[in-house]
Structure formats: structure tokens, C-alpha cells
Image (tube, rainbow, N blue to C red; front, side, top):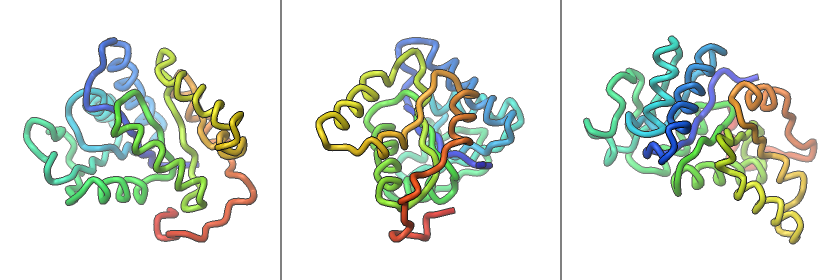
Length: 196
């Protein structure tokens, strides 16, 4: 089980109000389940809605933000536990160190970068935590199809494809992540310092 999850999502709100609503609801659900939110520290877009949902439901939130984004316009003003780091690389590592699992919500390049980095680290045995996609309104359907295509074409093992858990609602996703077990052949031989 996990008491802290790193959540990756966009600093933009997207074009469909359902995305912002789902991010807010996800934060509230995490708070209700006493799961601490570790996220990128932003106060706008999906990030802001996620943090607002968790805070308004009485949840704990940790923001991790690099110095160059730590501005009054971008930083969430109500997140008291804000960790300021020097680089994006430090931000990603710190978020991994603070979490026992990872979830991606809709976002852009940065969200996908963070998602695929933690998936790659899982594949390499750097961590054994669950990785989830909150597939709001089928937002990630194309990515899931691409991953299946990678398996078919021999570039991704089916066991590694199964490391990514997807669901359309937060409760279902969290239940599936809580039940997930890493493949038995996983060996924690690299960068053991990030295994929490």
C-alpha cells in the first residue's frame, strides 16, 4: 500500500472542463484516502486543480518546483510544504523519492516525460512501485494503443507493458494500483537510494 503518490499533470487546463473537474476530484479522492499528494508545485491548470481538490478535502500536499518556475504567477499560494530545487532533473528525482507510486493525468510533454521516466526506471528495476494513468474521457487511448503496438512489434515485453495501469476514474485506478505486484524477476540493482 502507499501513503504518498507523485501525480504528474499539465500546467494547462485543457480545452474540456471535464479535465479540470477530474483533476480536482482526484485530489479530493486522494485526500479522502489519506494519500499525500506529491506534485510539481504549480497553482494553474491541472496542477492547480489537483492541489485545490486535495487541500479543500483536508489532504496533505507537497509541491516540488524548480527555481526558474518558482514565481508568484506559477507557484500554488496555498501549498505550505513547497520544496524548491535547482533543476528539472532534481525535481523529478525528489518526487520519486517522496512517493510510493505514480499517476499521470492529462498533460503535455512534461507529463509524458515524467510518466515514461518512472516506467523506464521500473523496467530497469530502479523502483518497484505502481504506475497509473487516469484516462479521463479516453485522453490516453492513443498512448495505450501505441504501447500495445510496441509489444506486437517486439520493442516492449508484455510484462513491461503491464507495468502501466490505466483506469477512467480515480477510485478504480487506486484499487488496481494497490493490488498490483511487480514482476517476480525484478531486481533492485540500480540506484537503490530512490527505492522508498
